[in-house]
Length: 239
Image 1 (cartoon, rainbow, N blue to C red):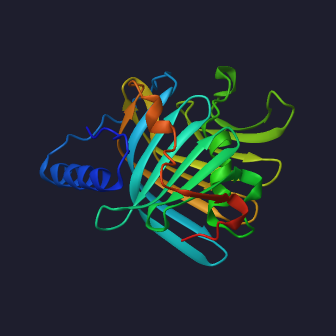
Image 2: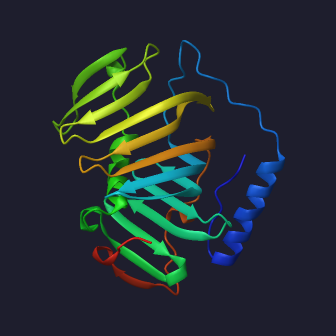
């Protein structure tokens, strides 16, 4: 099982990632158990996982592999890697505050999600808080149902015959789909998540060997800005 490394130096981080990929390629890992007819009901408190990413916006697309770390209620760290295992970009999210690090430019972009330029593929990343929100237990009834969130917003939830969430649509037309659940440490966790905002920006994540509800150091979720030039998020035009 791969562990999410704490990055402090880009070179050391890249070498660590490359080693993990080599070891992963050589190892034979049994497939996780599929979810039985009665699904586990545990909740995700922390997540560390290798991910395959696909982002699309305004006819442009970006894809690759990386690592994702998450801790409830709203802290995320995504590392996007090149085919050679070097870090292309890091994204940190805490509440509505986002930090994008581009090591090749020694530049960090910081601001609120609403400050991202139009037609930037990362706009769909703003849905991630909504994506991880857990519906109330009494809403997990097979079929499609309308539901009011705690702040009074309407959303449509879809559940399969086991009561597992398969999709959500909110009043703004944003969508998320969850696919192929497996039992991970007593938690039903999807292998794929696809989120799309009302503008058509999409982010697809495919999870590989996710590590659920294990301790996650605070440093993993905190951007290191040493030696970085910090610019407003509004100036971030993508890679």
